[in-house]
Image (cartoon, rainbow, N blue to C red; front, top):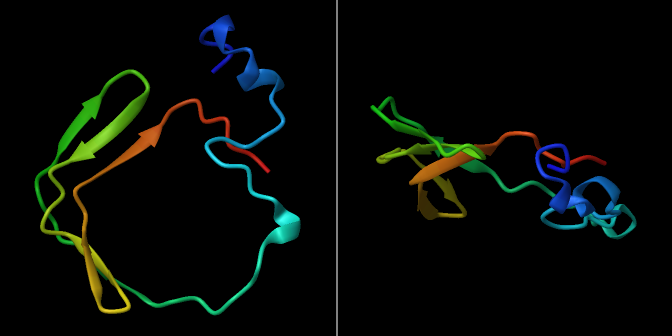
Length: 85
């Protein structure tokens, strides 16, 4: 992001992962919880706002975790990501 705007200097010099800082020494391993995927072919809307690609109108796709259903409303991808380990 710094290469896009020098006002975002912290993106080049910062020491923490964005948007959260994962302390690898504090990670606890456990058993994975099964996820039921219900992805269906559907027409979608793709929006490029210059920072992200947003895929909208994804219903009726969903996932189910421990019996609880979550509808997939939209997803987005960031361009020029600063995430790293």
